[in-house]
Length: 330
Image (cartoon, rainbow, N blue to C red; front, side, top):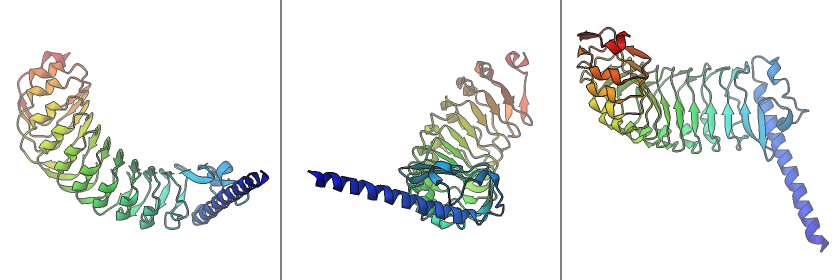
């Protein structure tokens, strides 16, 4: 009867030994990456020492079952690159947070090795180059933030493989080319921010597949053509920002009024032409309506008085005529 007990204890011993060894391997790989930083005297990472326990003592490191599961060194004054990051060693990493540092260089294709990633935030750095197509290998990813960097090139079609994604923010970069139709595959997406890039071409009609979307911000690009009718499907949309583009002068589409969950509507600095829709007053939750510099004409519809939650109404630099409704005057 003693043999099974001895066997169980032996298995437990080797399991613990394996976990400890694996964690040591991961820690060694992270120390090698840290050795490439330009500021070796970073006080926030002073706890990263070979003699200390990475899982319990290292700043920004969290483990699960002895393996590094989360690395959060956002806003940690890191000056370096991702070239020597141990992508192949941290196979159990789920949360990778490096925002608000001074990371430069490009995103290595090896990032595709982090197949367990759920959360990736590289925002507010100095990262340049293109988004590698290998990003499409991160099938479990739910949040992808790479905004406020120096990325260029097009958004890879492979981004459409990230079927678990709920937040995608690539804003404030220098991305160019057209927005890929594969974005329409991201059915769980609630936030899509692509503003302040150099994207061109039409707004993909496939965005109408994103029925869970709350926030769609495509401002300050070079998008052209009409606002696609498929946007009518986005009935959960709270924020629609399409301002500062080259959308064609076909007027404000009437289906905008069907998006009754909206609180923020920004269409300024487009050559929309036409009149302000009477049905706009049906979106009673609207708080901000901005349509300046849009070549709009005619009178302000009386239905605007229904917008009792309105805080900002900007219709400047248009060709409107008639009196200002008493509701707005008070």
